[in-house]
Amino acid sequence: MSQPILLAIPIFVLLMAVEFLYGLLSRNNNYRLDDTIGSLSQGVLSQAVAVCTTFFEIGIYTLLYEHAPNWGNRDFWTTWYGVALAIVLYDLCNYWLHRVDHECNFYWASHVVHHQSRHFNLSTALRHESASPVIDSVFFLPLALIGMPPEVYGTAAFVVLVYQVWVHTEHIGKLGWFDYLFNSPSHHRVHHAINRQYINKNYAAVFIIWDRMFGTFEPEDEPCIYGTLTPLESLNPVKALSAVFVEMIQNMLRAKSWGDKLQFLYKPPGWRPADWPEPGMPSRTSQEKHDPPATRGRRFSAVVFFILAGVAMLILAWYQQDMSLTDKLLSVLLVTMLLWGAGAMMDGNGNALDPREEKIPTIQHR
Image 1 (tube, rainbow, N blue to C red):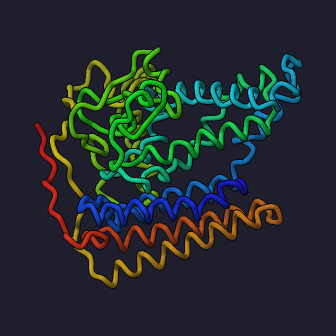
Image 2: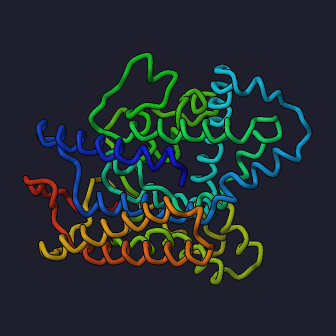
Image 3: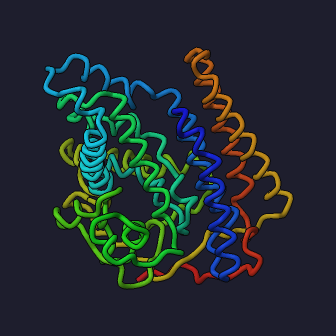
């Protein structure tokens, strides 16, 4: 994890606190303790794993940049307009990565964890995918070929990443002309929704013009239902990360031909061989919550486990330069076990953050 991300953590926490308090004051609170811990646990785990995947995040890019033909002008990229162009180009590459994340089963298996929350708030923005650094880097290698220096590439990546935090909120409506050019909360609510007309829309991170150009734009015109079509009924972070991978492997083992087995890797999520019975498209018509019972003691234990995992992650990130790979891997294992403990405690919890304890209708299938 980079120093800028470490330094940004207090800002992220402050923004979530402001959103939570605003929701309470406006009687429109959409934070729940179990969901928030579940989302933040994925963020903590992804940052711990990132300590061990630096080579994939920046190392491969740097190697290619150093050995590629000198097509770029380094002085150009260090100007303000060079950095601005770098952000635009990075965002374009990110659009295609994000689109593949949703339209290729193997990439969806990695990305799905970001969409599993059935709530939409700033904690959802921190629900990062742990496997992504290993498989995503290929989409940004063209930037090395055109001569974008690694430090400028890192700056562009950081700007695009941080920009996406604020669009994960229900408390900001449509923004007029701004919505035409840029990604906004309204556009990103559509992206996270599973309403039929919203599925696989609005992939943009910063500039919504990519979706308008490539035919994937959809305006927000009805209330959004969040989550995944097949809900994850658990707060176990390992299960959340592995659920689609496990299903994909099971389907590959079940498929008769090697051609069908391989197609489970690159076909869209939900694809089935022609000789399989059609399962039908899952459908959710209402918002729901994962709400098995849990005592206050279990909730308190979950918070303690989560805090310990966060502290362990911060120590790992701060001292990573002085640690061996073995020590890093053991530290990641410790963080994972603590987060697993938090999930086990919270898999059975009421709405601890919302004093109104609202009851949300359960899922209905057509």
